[in-house]
Length: 260
Length: 277
Image (cartoon, rainbow over all chains, first blue to last red):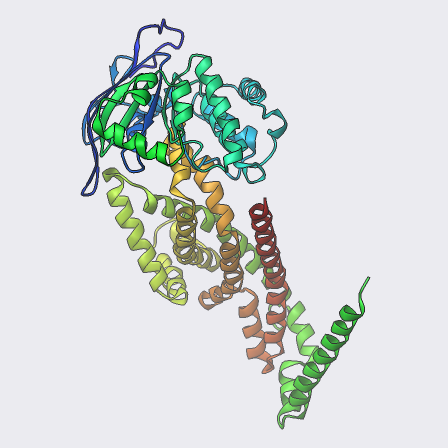
C-alpha cells in the first residue's frame, strides 16, 4: 500500500469500514461478525460491558491483532486481505492510546514523543523536536518535556501518550478506555484533551465507560455485547430511546449505578 | 556527626573484628605445621622473585603474566557481549524463516552450557591447531583459550540476555509497534535498552567469574598468571608464587565486585524512588 497523501480532500470519505469481523482467542470468540463504518471527522464511541469486545475491535482496526475473518478498509483500501502489506505503514496512520499509557520508562517525555517520528517517518530531529514541543505546549505539558514517566501523574502520563500518538500525524485516533486507569480527579484533564481533538476535526473511535462524555462528544454511539454491535445510533437517540432490549438493559444498570 | 548509638556500634564492630581476626591468626600460628606453611606459602623472597621473574633461570614473572589475563578478559568480554546478544535475539525471534537458526542457537546453548569450560579449552586449544588450517591453526594458546572462553560464556550470557528481554512487559512491544515502528526498531530502541538495564547486575557477576576463569587457559600452555605461578613453584619447590597470583587476581576482581554492589544498590534506590511518586 502506498501512503495516501495527507492533505487529500477528506470530506465525505469513509475513514474506516469494518465488515464481518471475527476474532477468537483460543476457544473464546471475542468478535462475532462486527460491521462498522466511520466517516471522516466522525467521533464514534464504543460502549458496553468489559469483555464485550471493544478493545479487541480497536486492536483489529490497526492490525495489532490478526483477524480471523472479515475485512478492514481504511480510506478505501482493504488493509486486511493483502498478506504482503506493510502493516507499519497502516499503523503510522492510526494512533492508538491504551488504558495503561505504556510510555517508554527509559525515555523522557520528549524522547517518548519524538522516537517514532524520527525512526519510522525519518523526520529530521530538529523538526521532530519542534513539532513535539508544539504539541506538548498545546496540551499543557511544556514544562514536563525532560521528566521521566515515573515522575508524572497518571493524567499527565496519559496526555503524553496521546501526544506521542499525535506526533505521528495520524489520520485516525483509537482510544482504548484511556481514563479507566486514572484516579477520578485526573479523568477530566484527559477528557478535555480528547474534546479538543474532536473539535479540531480528528476522526476517532473511542472505547469508554464514561457515558456522560460519550453523550457529549460522540457523533454516533455503538453498544457492543458478546462480540456484536447491538445498536449503532446518534447519542441522543441511543441514550434516550434505545431500541434494542439489550441496550436498554445495559443502560438501566448504568443508571442504577449512578453513572449516567 | 555520629550519634552515641552509632559510636557504640562502631566500637562493637571494631572489637568483634579484632577478636575474629585474632582467633584466625591464633589458629594459623599455633597449628603444628605453622612454620613450614609460612615458609612454603608466605616466603617473602620467593614471593618477590616470582612476582618479578628471573630471566637467567627462565622463571616467568607473574606480574607480567597477569597482563595476559587482563587482555584475554577484555577481549573475551567484548566478544561475549556481542555473540551472546546475537544468540539471544535469534532464540527470541519469531517466524518460520528463522526456524533453522533458532534450532542452531538452542543446540549451541545446550552444548556449551553442558560441557565443562576446561574441556572446551583443551578441545579448542589442541583441536584447532591439529586441523592444520593455514590461518586458524597458527594462533597462540592465548587466542585459542580466549575463543574457548567466548564460546562457553556466550551460552550463559545469552540466557541472561533472554531473561532480560522477557522481563520487559509485552505492552511495551505493543506500544512501540502501534506507533508504526518495525519489529527491529522496537527491539533496538524500546525493548533492548530496558532489558539491558535489568540484567547489568547478573552480567557483572558473570564477568567477575570470567576474570578468574582466564586462569584455566594456562592448561594449554599460555603463560598467564596462574601458569607462571605453577612454573615458579615447580622450579623452587616453594608455593609462595600461588599466593602472589591469588593476590593479583583479587586485585582484579574485588573492584568489579564492589562496582557490581554499587550498581545493584543504585538500581534499587531508583526503583524505590520511582515507586514513591
